[in-house]
Image (cartoon, rainbow, N blue to C red; front, side):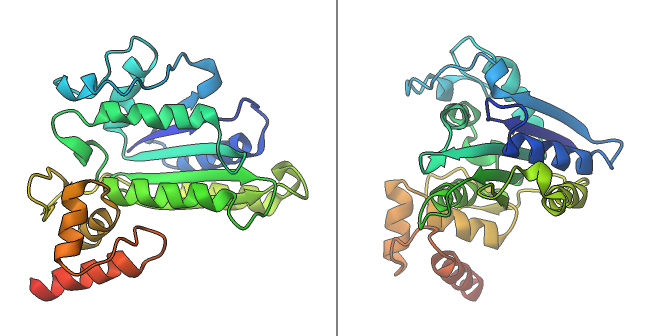
Amino acid sequence: MKTVVVEASPNRGGNSVSLAKQFIRGIKTNEKAGITELFLDDLNIRHCRGCWSCLKLDEPGCVIDDDMRWIYPSLYEADLIVLATPIYWWHINAQMKKFIDRWEGLLNGNGLNNLSGKTLVVILSYVAEDPDGVYLAVQMFRSIAGWAGMDLEVFLYNSDKSHVSMVPEKLEEAYILGERLRNVTRKELTVPCLVDGCKGRFSSIEALARHLASGAGVSHRDWRRSNGFMDLGMKNDELWIGIMDKIRNNA
């Protein structure tokens, strides 16, 4: 079992990093778990250029010569990816967004199958309980995980009252989550996408339905419309559940 934990806060004692550390403690109850911990402020990671050169490579990677060169193999091999970030100005911080943009380099010849079947854990700390705020980030990760075929776990901490170090029950909750996922492994991909030309493969009909609901390309949009579905995305569970039911009824 291999885990990559990514900490985006520039503050090593910040809330999201503190929670990530507790999560790691839980993972380590599996003595055989391999853990790669990345503190983004220590790394040389440049912005994605949008050049698509990564799609021409024979393996996950990028033409940019920076620390992502050695990070890509760890992401590729991981069963579990953990992203811990504070919310700045209604969304994830710039360090984490830059890192996620570089995931394009995981989509070489076999597309999203380099992520499909993995588990994604997102740890978000924030101050203001806004009608949107942190939930814009949650919505983004629902769409990313749905499209990529990843299982998603979201952990939230509102630091309005105090630093999480003063809330032992929240630290314990992060530890327990890590402990629960300490043996998670990547799922076998047995279900192909129903959209012509899509190379995606998924671990279940449910995972396929989430992909079809969140797929943003023209071909996936046309599939939804031709099958009588509106473009609701992953705002709630209505669309993907409807797609799942249709697939199962037609099986």
